[in-house]
Length: 147
Image 1 (spheres, helix red, strand yellow):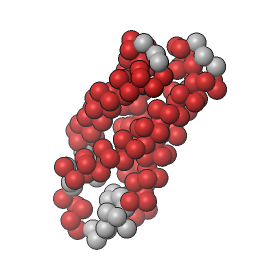
Image 2 (cartoon, rainbow, N blue to C red):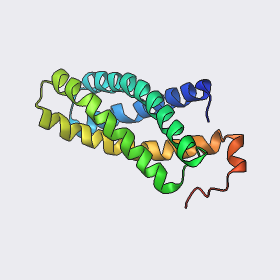
Image 3 (cartoon, one colour):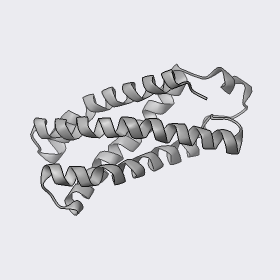
Image 4 (cartoon, helix red, strand yellow):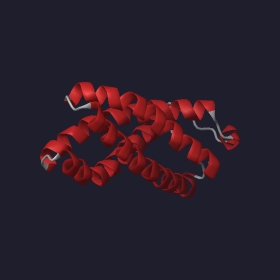
């Protein structure tokens, strides 16, 4: 399993790169001022960073218990990303609606669009992260990454 230091590096890199992408994209897509998108982005990043740590720690413990390792196949990576974003959507929906002064339905539509971006981004980022920072224990497990 990954160390606490590695998990912190993972979470920080994920959020910094994500913010660099989502603030300008969100400003264009939603027509919000960059300052509002920045507040939403940074606030969401803080919440997501905490959720990222808790979620990935729990997911890895569950995998270790159920499979005896933490190496993720392609279908498991997809499920991992979707479940992460679903949990984050529940966490972020009320504060986004409140801050932007919109209904929960409007905030939900906006949040789903942001979550769709982050599902794809999370998949790509986590795959690249695992390739860049592999665990030595994975060499002992015969799991194909695309099976």
